[in-house]
Length: 362
Image (cartoon, rainbow, N blue to C red; front, side, top):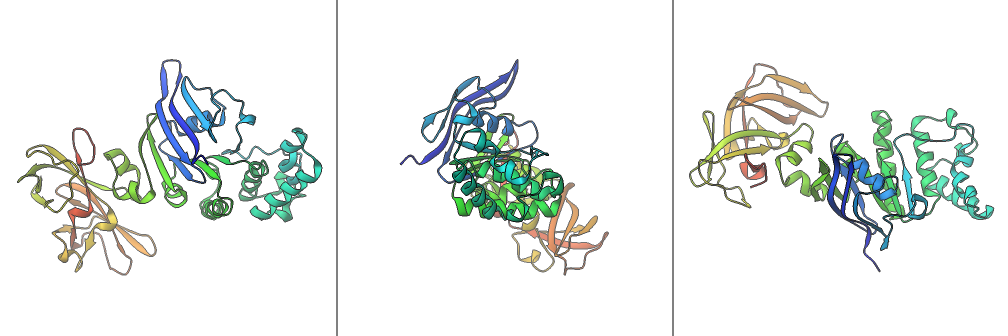
């Protein structure tokens, strides 16, 4: 059995002189949930549309289920696609919307009824089958749009930012539904989003994209804890990772900052930098300890709290370290106020070090 469900090989796409994708390669395993994540304009939706056959590639090949589909029509690729806009027929009931593509394809009525009933049961939209889209909420419409892809009974589902038109609570609810759907169906799913929370919660692996290239492909744990470069480190995480510029000294055991020396000897380097070269230390806000916990850390110092943001179960604090901004996250049980002097600390071994020139992980 072929373990690769979708294979994108050296795919390039240009619109005139503008290169949108350049020699991009990606292999998606059978039953895997891959999320394409990146800022607007990075090429993630373009890549999805190339896989779907909605855009013709300039170079390279695309295989689905081991079959070369580079020049196949979308309907012949064995995919189901869910778009950002619901794209439902307003004059048709939910049942007619779900069955329309199957009826056009000439499928037998009993099989159509069976597939519609199955999709409605999986997505819990059985009570909505006789309603029209105008009578549905945004979340219900998106469920119907997913159902329309589901009835095709294909091996690969493509999602193009399906939740971006919904409010925060609906997004959270439907995110759980999509995860449950994948666990139940075990189909291959490729999902495009610019929302890192969606990516981290849904994905088996995340492909983080920038300027038409995949910067890092890995599990949510890998991309969060071991980002390969400064872009990935800054893009993943909310609030974003703290970055401190400095210069390496003492055999790369110390990072010299403005008035501070960071001990980085316990950091596990992949590539050891030369002394006097410029480096950047990245540390997540949740890895910064406050008060008594801070005094147990390899690095500790006293700072003044500038801004406090209560977030319910936790609090975000903003201060400066060596003249550079620092955000920390702590329990809401810890009393904090602007102007307060506190001790903060962290273990540099838990951070990420980057070469300032190349921006790659050290």
